[in-house]
Image (tube, rainbow, N blue to C red; front, top):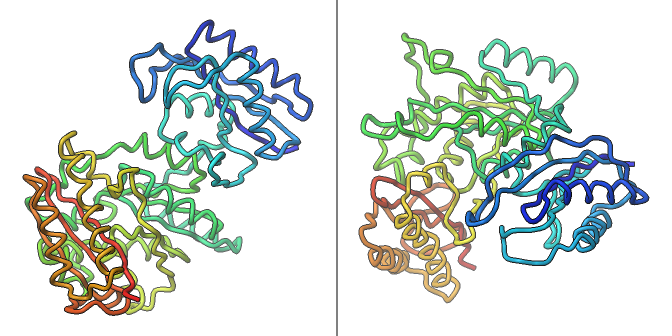
Length: 419
């Protein structure tokens, strides 16, 4: 039998009775053994607010079933208890979800494991903590010395290390990098450090969003081994004088409007690579220029680390996930969709045979200018390796842009191959 974790919820009728009856029927099902049940938690509804509070719980079970067979059993129990389809995030008599299944990762239309939303939802994480406390024992390391002890121990055991550097306030884009690291390496380290060296004097260092408790829960829920959470004094002493600068590829795109930014990025990542000694470091394509700079830095300084670039994770409407999206008000959030739409239009032009980069850039600019008061920082088309501007599209190019919505500057890009 394998171990599985279930989430249970109800907000119609006698909520406690509904959950207890579901647990009773689960326990009576041949091939399922209930190992542990959490406390019950009363929580506000998620998504659609105009409904009754939910009662939530979690269960640790052992089962002989495959994930899909278990899913069918759960759906049958829901139906037998009287559940009827409503609308997304609407009220329900009983809700039974597979949260985790024997450490497996499944991504199909009818079943995604781990449950894709569980790390965002306290009403899932609180009861899950009751039945799987070992999952929430992620190691928090605040000192460089302790981090090096962990690395030395991992190396002595022949373990590989995957590393995801972040500034915190995590979202699904960050988590997708962690999941990839878990697939490819034995130990996964995530750093959370809001790096002052990469912020200009008039930028948003002081107001950059921070929520370590939420970040910790999210990383714990997907099996992160270590969170490296140093303070500023750990990383930069008062006498600090050494910086890393990667020429040429850092001078265009974001480098034009954020002088010194990439020097700060390269410096902190070099320090983190030195401390953590990862085999593979993971970056998202949204920060394409940053990833290229780090890749070049590691190559030039003979650092034994492979830089892995992963696809940008987007919201349903195409907006690239970003911690800075939290700055946007509702109107700005809707306006920001134009970034993705304009990039898709540009891609379509290339696919139809357009090769003149100026005409493609102008099409992007015209589309964005229709969304007032969006302010364009830059729109550029560059070679995907050298990041040098191209006049005529040939081979693989990066179409990149940065646009202000109110006080928030957002970036996005896509890779396009002309043939």
